[in-house]
Length: 576
Image 1 (tube, rainbow, N blue to C red):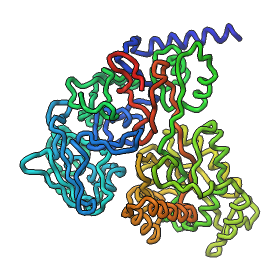
Image 2: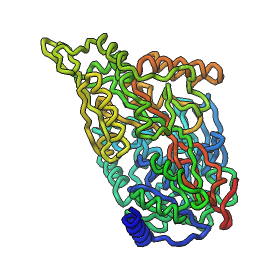
Image 3: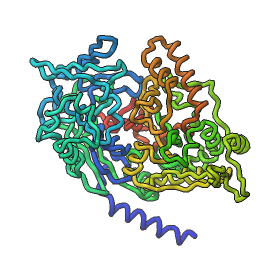
Image 4: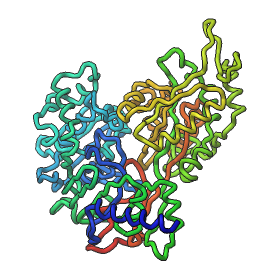
């Protein structure tokens, strides 16, 4: 056994040494392992968490949420906006010295361009469109292009975390200058003018996806496809000298090296040999294996970071297909929820990591989580009972539930939408299909690529789907996923009652009253069961021992619980 194992291990190390381009251990460089090739550094239209976690060092927002305190920090702005008219009018001023990495100043015209790009009808910018569609007007100060005013129709409007793009780089033909915010808000994909179609084609081209010119502290130094991406600190970055206690202004490392390694065995060897500093989103099995290693010999620390993300099985509450109208019945949706054995799935897929949740929010949110709502237990008998009440019985004893509709036997048949590019989703799908088959449902998976999946979800062309929602710090905002007017409401859930509750939540200032409204909404949600909540994920991180005292934060959106740029000060490991 020993003779067979040693050559394989040696070959792996040799292969590793040949494959990787780095061999230095310089203290001003941080080496981060990522699992997949970087497709784009283009956060407005990219939905890949890894790509966007890198792009956030290049594209800075006007305002960001401080991970540790969950408070708002002005970034490109001098200060948080001045607010009037009950929150509907906000005045912003950009820092005088804020410039793009090519040296040109950041102005309100760039902000306006970014908002117009978000509103372009065929661009997949849905995560930002909800806010942008609230805008009625943007007024730029005629005497100072760093000052602008936004008038919105809803006080919940915010520019927080929106990456700002340089107009002179991303719209060289000035196409969007010919359209107002109001005009773009009303455009439908089928009525898109030819010049906007041309802009959208240019904006989503493979060349544009790699331009990566922003106002953040880093720019691309080297990009080797399927191998390595190096970001280097911008010379004389405008943010130097600003409050370094704030996350956006912690940019101490000279270079950030993102090493692309899909092979888990190779990654483990690299980490053991201290040729990597950070391995984040470690799979549960490998995380457990690392825990078993001798800490006297291997020098790293392991961390579990809670996230503001949760995963759920979306149910199409308003199917277009007449044969699937039964999904609009709450009893049927509740039956599906009882049938899925979430605890077993969590143990098998996540090895017990992650936390189950009982309402569409995570407990770490400042407001919005209802602790009194119990978790739904796995209960096959209750599932069968509810389906029987809805008229689904096995009338012909073939093991499949059915109904007599218009004189014909119709089987209870469902399709589960699965991202074929995501092995994690495919594992979850295996358990869902098995559990629903156990109660007599005929179910099959439909495996599609990411773009097709997003399109089907948006058009509600599905029965069931595995979905992740990446939230931001601050109060919960049920409008995003559950208001009937929201673009991101992929389930079709909602009515006048639920909309009214969401709108009251937004308008209510008193914390106690707000919590009551959240509880009322969450109770209504749990009664209607528009989706099946799986769990809140935990980010599993392995970090070099030299950073063992680094204080990791909550992981949210494209922030993965740490800022690699903050790891070094003058060549020494940062201790916080």
